[in-house]
Length: 265
Length: 301
Image 1 (cartoon, rainbow over the protein chains, first blue to last red):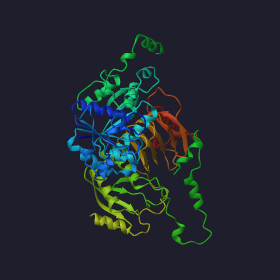
Image 2: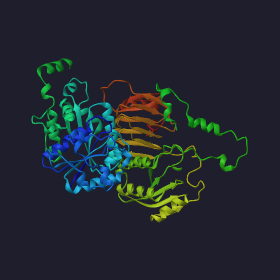
Image 3: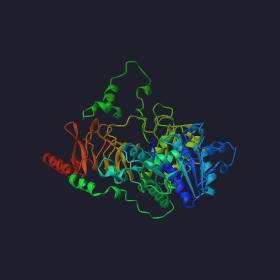
Image 4: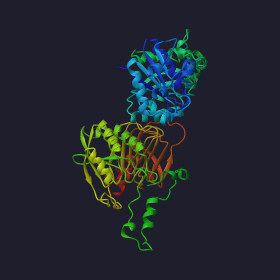
C-alpha cells in the first residue's frame, strides 16, 4: 500500500520543501522506494534542495501532455537510487494543472513506490487544492510563530474538509533556548492550539541553509547535526518505528540557565 | 442582522443602532405611488452569508438551501457553500442515526446535475441518504428527476416561508457540533450554537441564540445576532478575540490571564460583562428571587 503524503503549511517559508527533501532522502536511506513530487508549479525549488536541477529533462506537464511516461520523467537521485523526483514546470503557473490531473500523475507513480511525498505550495488557492487532491495523509509543517500556527490551523481545517483524514504535525525551527526563556512558543503551546498528533520537532540549525545551498539534504551528512537526527527520527516514525522525541533542552540545561530559571520563578 | 463591519467604531462596547429595527420602521409608512401588491410586500432580505443547514423532522432531515441563486450579489460560491456545510457535517455526526433520509429544500435555487451529485456525495459520506428534492425551479426539478430523486415541484410563488417571519417566531433548533472550530471557519446559525471542543483564534461563531463552548473560546463569538440582548456566551475558558452580543462589541483584555474558570458573557448596563459561571448563576438567582420572578427566566438557556 503506497502512502501518499502531502507536506503543507499554509504560510510560506516555514520549511515545507526542506522537510520534503530531507524526509524523502531519509526514507530512501531506509530502503523505501520514494517519489517526491513538486506541486509548486511556477515556483519550483525542490529540485534545488535535492541538487537535481541540472538533471531534469521532463516535467509533470510533459507527462500530462503525453510526451513521456511518468517513470521516465522521474529524476533518479544518484546518491540514493530509490529516491525519485517528479519536477514541476517552471514556465507555467498553478492553473496549468487540475486536481484530476494531479491525481492521475500520482496514480501513475503509486504502484512502483512505497512513499509519495507531495511538496505543496504556500497558500490555500489552486496550487494547494491540486497538491492535496491525491493525498491520503498530510504532514502540516509549522514554526513556533503565531502567524504560522494560525495558518496551519486553517490548513488543518481545510484538509479535514477535503477528506485528508490523517494529519500529523511537524514543528520546524524551534529554538530550545528561546523556549526556555519564554520568548518562543513551546511545542506544548503549539499542540494546545492545533490539537493534532505530533510527528516530530526539528530544531533551528544554520546548517540547513548551507545544506540547501549545496543541494545536499542534511540527512546525507556524515556527522549528523541535531536537525539531521530529528529528520531521521521522523522518517523512522513514518515507517512505523517508535522513536522518542530528542531532548532538545539537554544542551541548554546547564547550571547557569537553571539558576536563572530558579530566580525568575 | 448586525453587519460585521460595525465593529471598528464600536470596539469599546458602544451601542450601534440595530439595522433590523430601523428597517422595520422605514417599512411602515404607506408608499406614495400605488404599486402592485406583490412589490409592496418584498420578500425578506436574504442574508448572502446564509449557510446550508439540516433541520430535523419526525422521520427525516431537511437540508435547507439558502434562497436565491449563485449569481446574486454577495452570495457564496457553490464550492465555498459546500465546504462550510461539510465542516458542519463533520462536527455533527452524533446528531442522527446512520442512513437517515434527507429531503433537500432547494427553494428557488438553481441546481444542476453536478451540484446535486456533489451534495449527494457529501451526504452519503456522512451516512445520510438523499431521497427527495423540493424545488420551485423547473430546471432543478428536471435535473433531480434525471438523477433519480423523487421531486416536489412547488409553484414559484411564495409558498416556502417567503412572507416576512411573524415577530414571535421561534429560533431554529440548536446546532450541536463536536469538533475543533479552526481558523477561517465561520459557523452561522439562526439558533443556539453548542460546540463540544475548542473555537480557535481566527474562527467565528454567529448565532441568533446563545453560544456555548465546552472548551476554549479563542475566536470571535456573536450571540443574539438578530438583536436579542438577553442572550449570553458561555465558555469553559474565555479567551476570545472579540465578543459580540446583539449590537454590542467587546474586546478581551490584553495580556494573558491566569485563571481558567468557566465564564459567561452577558449584557448588563448597556455593555458586555463577563462573570464567572458560578457568580453569574448566583447573581441571577438573587435578582430573580428579589423580583419574585420565575427562576427559569434568568438563564434563558
